[in-house]
Length: 233
Image (cartoon, rainbow, N blue to C red; front, top):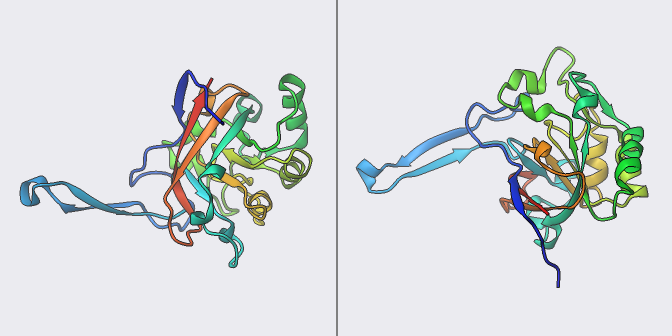
């Protein structure tokens, strides 16, 4: 019977509040008090936000109208082994860094072949910019600027390593200047996992973690804010 062995648990999700970094033109995060202790005897808020805001998971119907929504992922598919490719020192402040196959090969030389069925998490160092939305997304006349996974790299991981998905600490697994969303599309066409705006990836080892991904089962949702926990051996 499958089991998870761990010594500690790391929360990979950022707290949600109205001032978080948002994709250009996405709806704001809004909290509204609906009931108060003083007036109603209990405290209750409503909230609204985009399906792809904060730490979140995308669904296949993000790019394909006939595809599965976020509510279609099975419970089993949301518990996955993970590896962490730490590129923070290599990326530095290079906001248009494209993660290449050579980055994967370099990681495998140190840690061995990426196993089938895992989620590959990319630590670019961008998580440290989360509190400063302008530096996190860096939008100018040419659009957003942040590191991401090149199309050839995601294709290599899917076809040659049979991974289950990709996660990253930026606002998109695709580079900010990538307008076709090739890495997103490639993973989601296979019903895989896409995690974006992850936190605390620097707290994880290169191998051995298990992810438990909690999503809101929004009917036909194109994605959902996610509570992502890493069980560290």
